[in-house]
Amino acid sequence: MKWIRLVLNIVVYLATFYAAMIIHDRVYIKFDAYKDMLDRNGPMWMITVLTTSYVLLLGVFWFKRFFFKSEGLFRMCRFQPISRSAVGWLTVTGILCAVFFVSLIQISFLKSNFPALNEYVEIFMGDSFVITLLGAVVFGVLYEETLFRGLILNELRRTGMPLVAAMIIHALVYAYFQPSLPISCIAFFLAIMYTLIYNRLQSIWATIYTAAIVNSLIFTLRKLGAYDMIAKWNDIALIAIALLSIAGIISILAILYRSDKQVQITRTEVPV
Image 1 (spheres, one colour):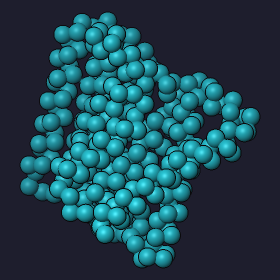
Image 2 (image 1 turned 60 degrees about the vertical axis):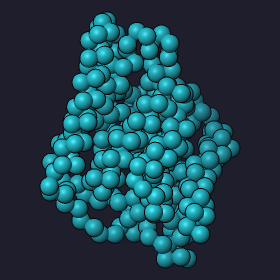
Image 3 (image 1 turned 45 degrees about the vertical axis):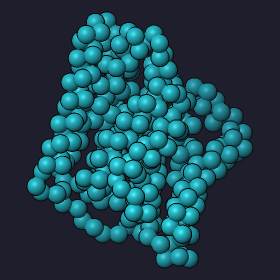
Image 4 (image 1 turned 90 degrees about the vertical axis):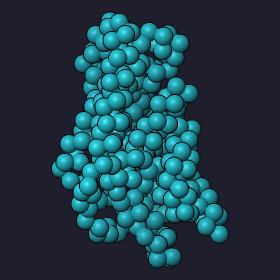
């Protein structure tokens, strides 16, 4: 029974996303002003679709809470405060992730053989950088972390599935929804890292904050022209920076897990 419930819940969660896309294509896109803005700013799609999907998710949880006395969306995802020390470590982690990504995509072999890595960044660069940040940093991050870490990962864990198995399965699902294979590979390992952070700090705010730092730096560096400067560095330097960034991320995760003091979390339910 628990496996049937697992599948049904995940199907419903994903269905809200597809329903939002249908609403977008059949309703929003018919407005000329919106269509014009979308043509000039691709991230508008994320803002409208993900906002609609989030509202639908809230509706699903309201229905479950009203009729089945299930817990609310925010409680299930664990929208709980995190300590200042944790914020500090997560800030550094986000910076290191962004440095790793930017260095990686400028390595000549990867740049020439996997153009999708740089194209992924360009997709988000429209006329308005504010819309880029809203789509990729605010709406995109909030929705992805809620859906994949807060809901799908927790649904897998509630079946009694071991953390490692749930982490890998949900990372594969997360990777599947990425726009290209190279980005899917990076997304898979990001999902593993976010899961480790989420499991340790027991708050979805931890992964939302980290992902927001990562995305904001990736697109801000592109906006400031830093990519062109970094592209001039030799591959040895870029590889060294990427490897040092990974080492730094692993070290921070080790520090978080070895800490004797668990981050203080106020466990109060926030109803939907």
